[in-house]
Structures are given as structure tokens and as C-alpha cells.
Image (cartoon, rainbow, N blue to C red; front, side):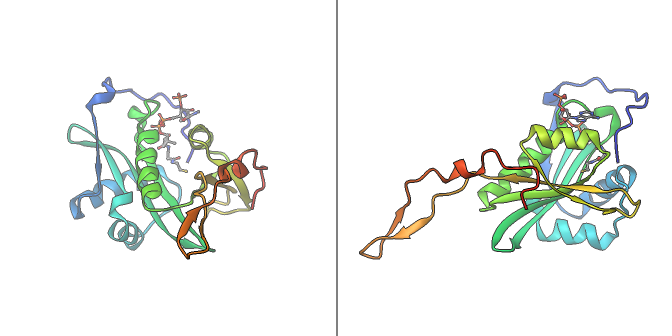
Length: 198
Ligand SMILES: CC(C)(COP(=O)(O)OP(=O)(O)OC[C@H]1O[C@@H](n2cnc3c(N)ncnc32)[C@H](O)[C@@H]1OP(=O)(O)O)[C@@H](O)C(=O)NCCC(=O)NCCS
């Protein structure tokens, strides 16, 4: 859902007052559900939320200002067509707290865990009309990999966005059967990817 920039009373706070925590159990679930239900166009069932937070609690983060939950990101990771990839399912920051880097911090934290876990890429879908989300992910280095026709229940198209991590040099076996690292700079192959890359 696009931030329409309606008149929203901003809250005065220092960035250091925002606390970021990873999913800590059932008491966090209603907080996540309330934020997502209010701000995203797609309706999700309790089973969907549980699927994500029970299986990948380490990829779910919440942002708090004092006792108030002001943002959340919900993700997963797994095998997909010979790649191990991360997927950002939900991202929300409540209106009075937007524009202060909270979503960027939430996404960055989940991406860091994905990288540490061996993911080669991260994907997500965003409505083609969601300028805020597209700008945010663009700044983080995501590219528009595909346009998905009428992807959402509301009939809006989606962009599939993709972030490719620098490629790890492939491990090759030498004559003795030991593993050696290939010396080419494989990360270069990702530079200058075309718009429609998959
Ligand atoms: C999209 C959303 C998560 C952004 O949260 P946020 O905390 O305001 O994002 P950040 O402050 O980290 O923004 C980082 C950058 O993203 C871009 N951006 C974010 N919101 C923007 C907007 N409404 N318009 C234009 N650019 C925007 C800017 O480049 C911004 O950097 P800048 O502040 O230096 O200009 C928030 O608006 C939201 O919850 N929207 C409703 C739910 C939603 O659309 N989720 C995404 C689904 S894919």
C-alpha cells in the first residue's frame, strides 16, 4: 500500500531511541499482525503469520519506541531453483515514524542474517504503485526483475524485486582432491544487469 503522505502527526524522537529486537515469541505476534493488517493491502491469516515467525524467527524483527511497536519485517529463506534465497514477505512502519530510516534498518538486519545463512539473493514483491517501497528497496540495491500482472487481490501489478549478493568463488578440487578457491572475480558478472534479468 502506498504512503499517500496524508497529514500525519510525526513523533519527535532520536534514532537512538528506537530499539530493534528479533522475534521473541507469541507475545510479539499480535503486534506484528496489527501493523501488517493496518498497512498492507493483502489480507493474511494467522496461519500465514505463524508459518513465517515459527520457521524463521531469526528473520523477523520489530522496532520499538518505548513500549510501542512502530515497525516490523517478516521474512523467510530456503531453496529455490538451485539457489538458496531469502524472501521478504512483509514490511511495515507506522505513519508517524516513517521517513527516519526504520524500514531500512529492519530490512538490513534481516538481509544480514540471510547473508550469514548462505543466501545468494533476496526477493520480494511490491505493488508497482508503491513509490515509497520501490524507492526504499532501490536505495538498498534491489533491481526490478519482473512485472507480475494483476499479482495482488486488489488487481494491482507487482514488481518482483531482487538483490543479488556478491558471488562466492566456486570451490574447485585440485589434483590431490583438496578444495581450492577459483581466483576469478565472479562478483563482476552481476554488475549492469538488465531490467528483465530472469
Ligand atoms: C515503505 C515503508 C515501509 C517505508 O518505511 P520508512 O521507515 O519510512 O522507510 P525509510 O525511512 O527507511 O526510507 C528509506 C528510503 O526509502 C525511500 N522512501 C521511503 N518512503 C518513501 C516515500 N513515501 N516516498 C518516496 N521515497 C520513500 C527514500 O529514498 C528513503 O530515503 P530518504 O529518507 O533518505 O529519502 C513505509 O512507508 C510503510 O510501512 N508503508 C506501508 C506498507 C508498505 O508499503 N510496505 C512495503 C511493502 S513492499
